[in-house]
Length: 408
Image (cartoon, rainbow, N blue to C red):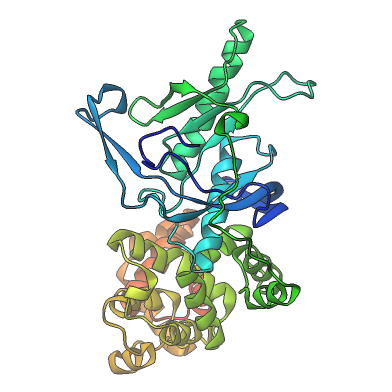
């Protein structure tokens, strides 16, 4: 039975005795913000079952739930089937919970099941929290938290509630089993209602829904259709391409980015160099312009061409970075742009030496200061050489020749 106004028929269809799956697990990966190193943890999954969705309650009359004077009910999603995943009590921190939810979102997006947008309710999360003294085996009284519409809200709500319950225990206050809501504006959890036990829901069979029998052949067929999932891609990127856990995470976070990266590598680009371009320069552009990777004219084949030009020494990395904004907005062939504008890297020692002589002749005071012991001025001369050449000189060769001239 269902007692709330967002499902007007007053009962909710839900799988109970025979869920779709049970006794599973999901491995999460936690990235250290400082070291970028990853640690992995397996979170148990109690069960995965279908049930029908309820409507959406909209509390009005105030910009805060606590001050609302009336509520509206949106029944557009009422009765629509959803998947509920119940997890084992293996999560210990707000960070672990947020990462667990994000990993689930990556999976449903990869499989095309859902867009997983928490702000729109496509992915929702309730958490049950309890604390216990160190060494105690029995769990404490659990409290359910609702009204979290982002991954950061999940983490902050859990961290706040853990702190609240610890303080209550230490002061001798009794924790009651209840449902609380996360108030984003005050960054606190607030009591909402007392929590019913499972027996209060009064489960009974739905006579209009016959059982669905799944054969072994069907399960094997579905398993064979599964694509490579995000966790598998991360592992492969680290072992096969030698990428860091952080870069592997960024590249596998969204399917569009993953496909773009893999198409660029398939076109002949070095995986590590490609990773650097996508996770740094291209990612910065996409963030600033609020664009997705499939909205830019720069194709994977063109990015591969750009990476290959740099790797072969045809152009310098600086020239590549100078060309990137135009390629991102207009597309085209990097090689054609290089040839049309005469941007090929200068690797002729005699030509570079002539430029170095011009730079040294133009800055006699700095040259005298360098030879007098101010060795940091070498960076100044490198900058002047790059400026004079338009960034086209071979960096390694020019540094070598410049050092020889400066110390002659």
